[in-house]
Image (cartoon, rainbow, N blue to C red; front, side, top):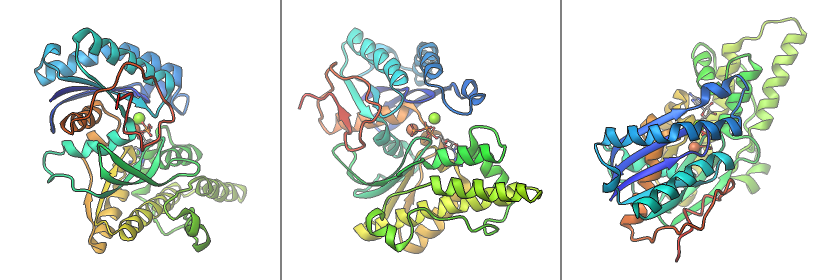
Length: 350
Ligand code: ATP
Ligand code: MG
Ligand code: FE
């Protein structure tokens, strides 16, 4: 099926077009620059930016794919989770398109979409089930057991406080680095010693593991970095930014990879899929690769352009739903800012 996907859950206006499992176009307009001076995404600004970017983005995606609106078999849209106002802009556009074109509409889960991005990786062999998936982005840090992308996604664990990307952004600010902090920390860390400072690994003690084996916590780590730098400053010493960045990054990466591989071992699943914007982190990719190889786990990392928020992953998930024979969504759905990952599609009749 030929599907156009609309993604507006955060600050990226993503329009993607797929034919089955083939990516035809993936247009992304970001309002990040407008948020940067506030040090984080401002919901109202994001929603207005989506409104302005949608029509030109849809036109660009169609022309890049070389298809016309009348050829589409379905429209797909993110219905949650995300910023309510931002989601509503995409949902309104998707409903208008579906009604005016008379095409089916699939309202899907953004987080499951991040996993579906993997399907569009033309160079990789087909995704096998079950697979463990680690989703790390600015708003989420979740460990999932995916038995079937279109019908069975189990939440094994998630962050109890900050998301991993959020932790990168907050620690970057602490170190005086600009927003978004992930890439900045990555750059600074390249010159640093990851063993310089022993920062804590959240929820990793034996007593924590009993209840939170697959859960994450990054706020304690952020506080530890803050305390360490404050003490240094109080002593009148310079902050070794590169060492702090490298040691912080190592702590985050260590916990993410350790818990993901524990989930693989516990469930007898030798497959791990990574998704979300934090996958851009070089160290995370490297450590995951090393340790997965050592554990006999096959690691899948979609291309970066498909890891950050985009419309193609939304279209890809809808394509899987269509190919699995799932009914489309009715128009009776809205934005759900806290949609749980287990709800793959919303508004379907049956
Ligand atoms: P969500 O998908 O949960 O709604 P989001 O849209 O904010 O959240 P993404 O766009 O997938 O998430 O990812 C953005 C996050 O990724 C930011 O927090 C950013 O700091 C982080 N990030 C980007 N590049 C890197 C990197 N190299 N290292 C670490 N973090 C990074
Ligand atoms: Mg984003
Ligand atoms: Fe996302």
